[in-house]
Length: 502
Ligand SMILES: [Zn+2]
Ligand SMILES: [Zn+2]
Image 1: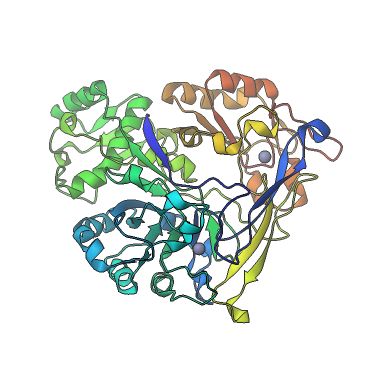
Image 2: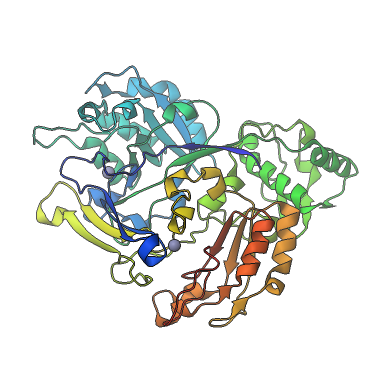
């Protein structure tokens, strides 16, 4: 399913610009391919380093912490307000925003709600002194956005409040209003010009940092550009005209229809689709798609999903349940697949850094905010491995294409019958392989059930993948293999194999 992804994040490197006084960013090798067989880095940074989100606990001692907030908080439709005419240190007022209040209100009522991003284009000054001189939002304008139902305000600048470099404390009015309302802020966004027009769904999913006040994020927007294939549309059309209510479709067709259903929300909103009864519209179950034809008007072939956000496409990256027909029985659209990061309670392979978080600024000690300093490894907790983990000339994590990391639909293989240190062989995956070939899925998730043993001695005794199976999966064009274990390879006290990694 072709989609467009826009990266809204700054790259984290040794020159990251941080808020005055915040922990700096560093990334140092602790294991390397030559001596150890693989590359692993230790990362030190703050909870507000680079492109990041602020949780209410940043400014409120009793506010929600980053891991208290459901993942749905960080997924939203977006309205980008162009305030690029503003000069250094100029105030952004309600008059600058009010022409957008209708569209903000409309999107606030849609599924996933609405984020408002203020586009100052100050991101062009990132890593320079001028970056600190950004325009900033008036407190009452922030309040009016909250009153409109906005769940997150984002800026392509260091802060939505004034930043002072003379040591005096600025008025943190926007932080107070937004975080005080239980909403969230996003700072240091970039590339907002690219999502100024069109319909975008934005993900700002944070790290699951237990008890922390914010988190760096990989911010991105995605947008579907593919209409329903004409053969699917005509098949549906003829079936509907015969008033069939159950259509036996190919799985790929069902997937296309799932995308249409994602558009459904928008289409309802624009009065293009007029369901007689919103309580029972469409159900996808197994290999059959059930469509209540009387609810669909105009004919499906006339529905243009060109401008609809690719909800299914987002889902894999957002740690959501893939909307693959095989797995779409869940009514939830966002499921968190991430283990929590708790100091001292994150299992790590030998030689890997431990996770730790400590208060750098503390409200309890009279500081203006809570800010944590973090240390973690590049393979801490729920994570992805880039080819550079094992290959000196392999792609590094910042070089991976967002569309690969979100390549959906995904297939989940149920391997919960496997036992400790048992080999996962091709026979275990034949059904999943069939599904991959039928649906064109690029992501295979292996569900062993081992996540229940997270942070116990049993966690490393997981089943492991046969390297030949991994090769056959690559031949099927699978680009991401995910597991609920510590490694796809066998890990014992005596040896740590790496055949599947290689
Ligand atoms: Zn922040
Ligand atoms: Zn890893």
